[in-house]
Image 1 (cartoon, rainbow, N blue to C red):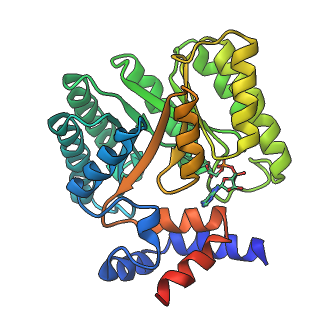
Image 2: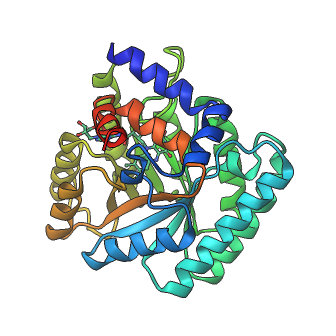
Length: 304
Ligand code: FDA
């Protein structure tokens, strides 16, 4: 049953028609728990709230379903506006983005040239941009583009997913680049030919890559709500004298708030991924797929 629901939410999240319909209704059915708002101003207000109790943020303008060059350029313009809004408001946040929203599926050149404009603007503001990792079909090209960008920019990082078989080799390859990595379990539905199907194997691989990247001496964002993974990281850094300035914990907006605040109290850097924008549907569906129990929360909101 749980697997069926996961598959259903993952498929729905990819549906353009469902996205269009959801857009009409605005942030409803509990989506506001996971998405900070539809406008930049709402997202900046949310980040200000997080900053007040010591959490920093990474803002993501949700721009899924980009099919034309025009939409891709609009999405890049929103990234730049977000960087400007962060600088103007003085909130403590960097930016996360998905390269498909910059037109990666339309033209690699278009995507790279937008990435460069975004990174130039981030550099001007002294800020940093993280490239989210999408499904397996985009993994190699994302890493290739990251490698290309690193020749010119040091204010860019990328994400590595523990569920992929290739991941350990990717960590090795990224070592020479001194890559700033966000390490995650992985959120997409992947074939057992490329990814571990069992959760326990993903968790084990996750621990291995956390250790490896930290021992390689590079900045590591451990992005997970899993307390076992968080406790493992705490113990590992303490046993290996790894300073609190070499890593951070990251969590998603609206998930495990108490744990987020507890980690701040303990003196760890905690960054919250704050998504915003009108294209919130795909993101919302991925959050439901991760934890089908969230569906009760949605139903409660529908009948409120
Ligand atoms: P796990 O799924 O084992 O969950 C541990 C506990 O966390 C659960 O028992 C529950 O309490 C809580 N929890 C987890 N998900 C929840 C949810 N949706 N709702 C409510 N509670 C939940 N993936 C990817 O493929 N590419 C990317 O770029 C990113 N980027 C990213 C950034 C940040 C900051 C985070 C935290 C995560 C991502 N992810 C991601 C998503 C990641 O791959 C993964 O799907 C989720 O983080 C869920 O896995 P956990 O590590 O939290 O563990």
